[in-house]
Length: 317
View 1 (cartoon, rainbow, N blue to C red):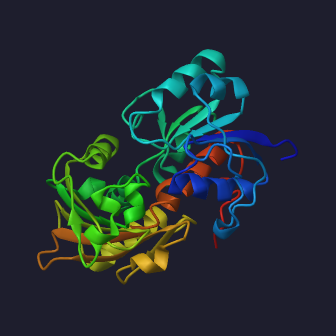
View 2 (view 1 turned 90 degrees about the horizontal axis):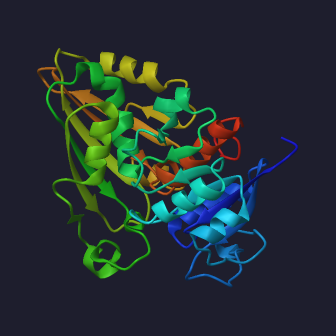
């Protein structure tokens, strides 16, 4: 790792952008080329209160500017629907650039690699168009992928996210007064993460998202009907076989708490249990929506694409 690869970040103002900057500064194989934000342009990138000590200033770069800067890697941390002009500019000017899109814009595109490393890393090497999974979708897939051969009927998933998942643009989903002593349901049907998990795992599911008054983290409760009886011990074996050797997936028999996984780079799968008939299972997943649900996973995907160790630059252990 003598020569560092350069990385540019578009959408650096958001919570996820800040987490990516922190991970870049501690990565021995990556060097920040630019951090683009219209709102922060001209301000110092260093934010000592947030632990960011990188030199330089934020810039406001349009798609052509980004393409001309020539970074080896471009991370797009933009809201849904805004990535395509940057992708087109890079396709035209620098098609070999590794692009990591954190939005949902390319999660259904067969020409892009969908990077949930614990499930897809076998296809990661050398990829230059990488779609980062959604945070809720990561939690649902980690719960459901090991059960896929046994699933019967749609799985039912109830997710509760901290309000950082609603981003920095003001809305009722990140309004402290709306959330005070409240749980806010939204998008009761047709949520993009429902379609994302169905598409990636080839299963049916129903997803009901909510926002709560805590800042970061996700609790995902998954209930799935099974085609054959399965005991708690068998469920334990299933999850240990799937994730027992995964450094960024922790397993525990008790139900995991959101607060225990906030600011952590791993997901925790736990609390699995079966009903009296042993033909349905309930399992819980918690993760930090800004880290394993976004920034940490992006660094995993960059490491795999570039030939670094998958955990390079990611605190773990």
